[in-house]
Length: 112
Image 1 (cartoon, rainbow, N blue to C red):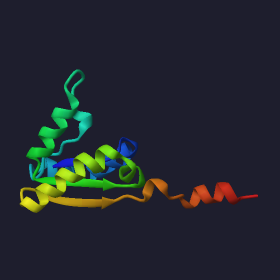
Image 2 (tube, rainbow, N blue to C red):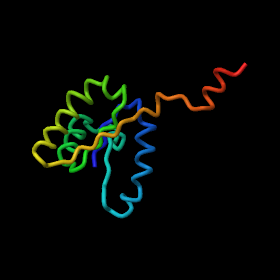
Image 3 (cartoon, rainbow, N blue to C red):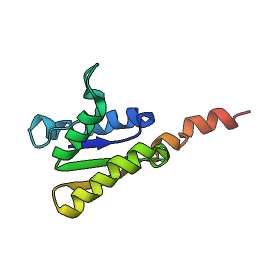
């Protein structure tokens, strides 16, 4: 499973990965994201190779993801091609959480 995400959403990717950990333990999925690239490794080829071999591609969609040329022009483009070829399932995960204020945040802002 390939994570396509903006680096600004790394915390959200980590949270999503926690939710999927049981499936990893049961060997139902094997997840990969670019933070697993070792130092000194050619990052673009490594990303391309993992995207190419993925049978599940998660698109962690946020405003930062949509603003990323690399995410949209490279990863989403290839993900959708793989989807049309039926060689991968593409799952969009809409993320609004990072942009929302919590109730406590609002209390701090608006309390006298």
